[in-house]
Image (cartoon, rainbow, N blue to C red; front, side, top):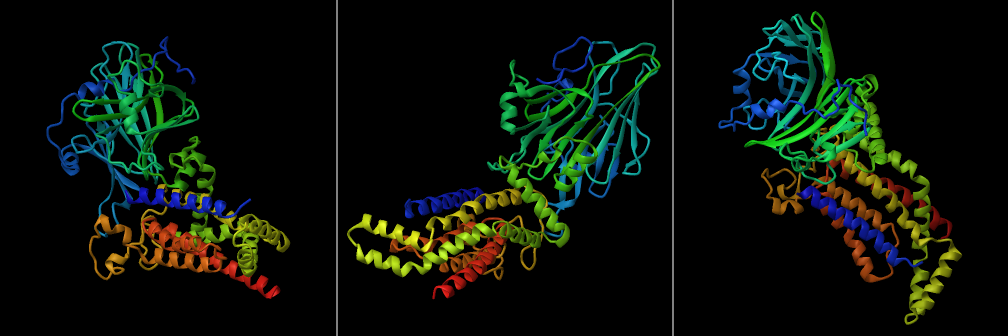
Length: 575
């Protein structure tokens, strides 16, 4: 992958620069409430039994949806339908996001019904602890809906009554974004008490295509007992297989509240039990001709006497991992650490503030490119004292170059004596050659934090800047191999490394210009190596997100301005 190769190369070059400078310059969990039962209950054990048959034929989503009775839903962010057979939420489209920048491209299809190539759906139901001969709704149950459309202003109830007089309801409501509230209800009009427990399950059939990039997690994600768990699909298959007698400890857990589900780069589905509910959490994998991944939970066992009823509520998030939306759910619904659904990485203490800052600037600028520029200026202001000291030292070093050259000519064969005189010269003039490295050391973590934010957050997905930059999360589209867009053709992957865009070329020019203001190394070989760095970084950053190259370019421009001003003052003062 070009992105991963470029990142490795950038890290290597950055480390090499630092080392080069150093060489050059001397010197358990809460118990579930249940009726005398402390075992971990597997959610939807019957799902395995009903899916042992290998699917012989794959249908399109429209074919499956149009062949079943459904309740439609729609709000400002999502649209789709609930299958009345089994009461399965298996059709959901993200209305605000498309698969590409093309006008006729499709919206993101997040949930898909069984029978399609890659089913992905949510199931809600009941199980009984003992065989009490109570008919429970299952995947073949045909539910009746009290309304044909679910919307933020119009909740919907699905109803089914068994032969014993027990009525089951599933009440759905949805907000204007990505949150469903689901309430399971039982009305016991039979002549005996029943004991059942609720379950909720997210099921994903077939291993989804993932980016497989080490800085991004895709797969199982949960926040249980205030512990964030991230496992990829291989981990679930290896450690939580239904065929294993002994599974890894993370496969079964107990909690009170929390959330769990599956995450992609930008999208997520997550079950969210009420914070006061005690639950048993399970993650499973099986393979009956298809890889079957499940994340779900069961509630406590409830005894419902004749003539009584029960309601069991929880929430379901299915949508885009947008920071402001997750933050609002965190605050208003008290969903603990819900913003951690975004993969902030090990250095979240840097990536989170970077993301919040850029989003704050966007709220005023209305353009993420301008927000990145504003963030760059903010970073320059915060690092101003450090950069000021560094540039002053570099200006003094540039002024001392004639003296350094004389020392080299005076002691051509006595390196030790030359170093002693060189140190004395630095001390006498108040120059510190190491100071020039400090801005680089500070800029590297900021650079990679911004890279992480650009890569994992959805805010800049298809976010335009100006002119030819239509997606700040993607590389500059006008490359050298297409004569900057004059000749439209698909550049082969082999030639992509030299398909350098306009913005990376501009970044390389600013880096070269900045280098001209720095004192050149005394050694000719070292000087030649440093002279190549702007060209190397131009090639490396050409494959990075345009937003990142924009940040680096603006940072270079501000550095040049500050450095030129300081050098002018120092050289004029000592001229």
